[in-house]
Image 1 (cartoon, rainbow, N blue to C red):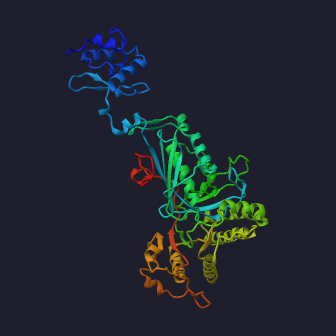
Image 2: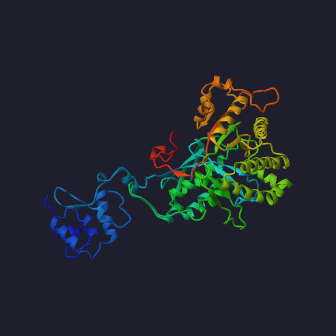
Image 3: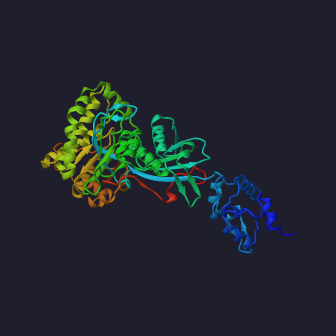
Length: 516
């Protein structure tokens, strides 16, 4: 078969041979010789009509053409004859081909820590916006020990937003999740993944749906602020996927609308959630008081008394307290403002005595508010009370606080020691009274297991040989099995991105959680 002339080829494209062609045209004039290609490159002041270009591409590819201008990078030169041609599917990477056909999946994975309040948040003045009745202060724990991991995926093939928590699909119809999604989408920016050939314009985010998979490495709904880690990670990772720029606590404000305490998990170290005064909640944001390096001697030991879901959720408990507890109003208006100022100073000066007294007092008052609620709310149990008694007796015997305790809305004790030495002594006392049920010491400690050897506890025999604490005045009674396990941690940083795609919870091909 004879090769058509250059004029014939041009005529087939709907232009005369003498017209000047832009570089974009050269990809669609198939099999032009080198001289013709050179002519096209030199003369660039007339463009082909887009529909003519698309028609020609469809005739070559047998598929839908691009709906955007073509660049010189899209043109390939046949090394055998020096001719110009449009790259076929065999020339494109699998990810590029998928992107062209609308089958791509773009993902981001993040990890966020939990936080433990030392000045408690309990009660809202606005249920819809989640605006608190008082300021609160928390410590952020090391995400290597307590954290939520979340992967967010977006694809034009997703027909709706979906979410899985710890492998189980949950509804996203609730107002809190939708509020966070809406606020992040409003702030979304252009996103481009050159490697995968994916480009999303900011105005297109509202048309795309997301799949979200989240996993907590600690008990959910058991009073360890799992919602704080989960919602903070949800907002942080969505923000990363959609290229949202942080501006003066904006992400913390969005996280607050998902779960109040989640706003404090947006930052590491010591964090204050300002209650704010504006009715729209614009000034109710979290601010970092000091980073995790400021007081890095602190050691945190958590006694997981129960990992079961609590009977009264924090949301319903707060609502009942606001409506029925006179003590809550007095606490919010009179006690907490002064306590917050003292706690800020204790943190700034690293004054553990003041820090411990304030922490214990605020925990006790929070649970007093729960008891003052009608009907009363019982978050702690007998084991919780025994741990408080253990710490109080030790502190009193020393004449100064050696350890602080605090309990969120659950029975689990969070114990804060000023240094490693005090932490090891505390652990010895705890294991004397609460030895493991199954004699498996290694699995009884989660997180920083090295504290066991620091405390001289390498086997169950070492635990059995522990002497009774010196401050014990009554015949010693042990409560084997009353604590499920312990977690040893420290102060930690805020959320971070996991760039290793193998750590993602969602399959990059199916867009579904791995294993589903």
